[in-house]
Image 1 (tube, helix red, strand yellow):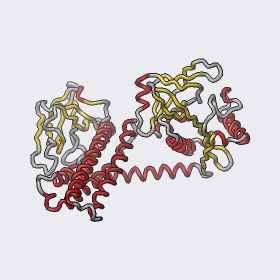
Image 2 (cartoon, one colour):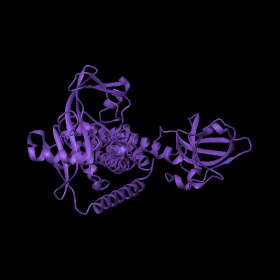
Image 3 (cartoon, one colour):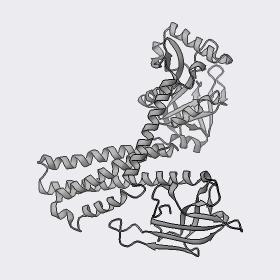
Image 4 (cartoon, rainbow, N blue to C red):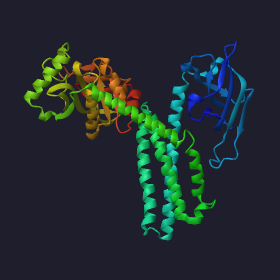
Length: 448
């Protein structure tokens, strides 16, 4: 992945490499790439460059460059302080001729492509930090046990610090990996992983050297090698300082969005949760009236606040004394490949006067919390219209590419669901992929 240049590291907007279109429909590429991992061993480089004469927003692109192409030169660096087994080197491209097919993806797709690559790289590097912490911890425990040093509190503190770092980093990596696998944007989350991970790993290496004393500086001990490698990993894929800029920018952006959402609803909205057994006649009538007002053309909802299956929970958002929106939540067990799966079905309705004010967001967030508390592995929603599509996407739902069926509660006949379904696996589950691979999902009796 040939991106870094003498004057541009992870900042891809500062790249100076140029691809000039030629008369034959191809390109002439000029590029000086620096400190590129694997470049001396690779057969193909993904080289970033700007296309000359193209609008700035579409100029940054990726080119497939075979390293055996004439006028392409690779040189390995042999004087690295750490990362000795990583074949890092420079790539020089001097007006190399590339066919039109060398352009990877759509015109202007370079930013999104490298954003994805950076995310994948930082996720993998996060696991290197975790591995380093575990290795230091194992060596520290072995050394302390052999010398009977565990009775000293300062010795205990070093090992406890390694253990805490291991637990926190592993948890964050698992959570971020699950989000990344669902296609969510985890750019800022991975910056958090890098900021914390590299500091924690380097601290673990320093603590191990401190325990070992002068022996920790000897070549036969891995501690000093780990420390040198971690110094390289603190730079690779973007420095910790760059990650802090990303996190600060994302934090301020989120704060502004939250402030805007609050400003749009001066009345304020509060969400209450009502189990089915606690829904009295008066509240049921209020819910029926609300549903009739927001969905007047749905005969199946006449006199009801749910379609087919009574909900286990109703979440009500109120602005003052008035219902601004509701979410119903239905718990169910479905069968998938011979095993039971806990499922939560959710449906939403927001009053037109309160749409775009964060009501659906507040209801969805609380519904997902309840679903997870109740042990659900899968959450499923059907959309009467596409109003809530962007809301579900923000919470990691995706369009379910599988046929969904259920048994009609009155006739008992098999019904094929026609409304589009949106699904989300909880706690890092890959169940949505499993359902799509199978191609069908049967909900049992009734839908919601």
